[in-house]
Length: 89
Image (tube, rainbow, N blue to C red; front, side):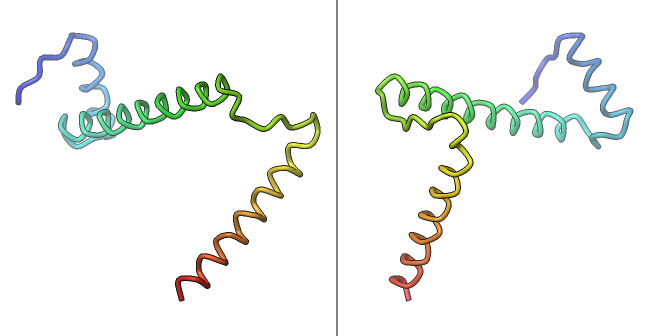
């Protein structure tokens, strides 16, 4: 596959190659595509979060209670994992 870059993008590739950040253009493009994939996944997760809030599917945590709530969620998660591990044995 051949790709034609705009002048600005080509200069950016050359700059990173000259700095030794990447050994060749393919490595840089591969890294850029991986970051693009991560960005797309993050956008999808954000959209799902917004949709959940719009459906009213959330827990309202009083101000100053966030850390305690997170600790309880963590404890319940650890208990659940322990039970699943025991069940799997």
